Image (cartoon, rainbow, N blue to C red; front, side, top):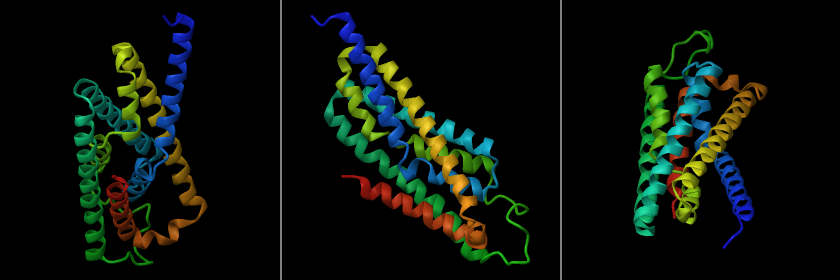
Length: 219
């Protein structure tokens, strides 16, 4: 029988590894770039962008926990089916969202230099639609790299799986928020405002490209 001290050490190591994995997983562009692009297109404040990041990150982890629980119950066969299907739904949503911005930009044309400034012009779509589209994009795509943790710790019981979910949520939300803020700051540092007149087209193409990365990332 394994000594209790060793059990606690192994548990803490596993939770630490889970946090690190979730944080590094959040570095993927699909976890922060849409928030930067859509937040800018919608003229969102930092607070509103971070609110969407937190809600989307928690939804992302909640779906991951649900799928992980199903995997524990049903085994690897369900893992292969669900993990293979949901990311494509996320890609479809990214395609649709990106296509809307791209078509809208092509119809309206580039913003004239003497037109309203980027700060004065209105949002591209309603704030609620943009917010929930971002949340849905993350919600319908579980974190595949986190799923093996649930399967490996299936014998640990509900308490261990719940602790895993908590550290996954902390690592994911913290990582998404950090990389989103860094990217948003980089936008101003690199003086990307010069591309503002083409922002709709850039946003649409970027979201479509992210969708393609989601598809190509699948085995």
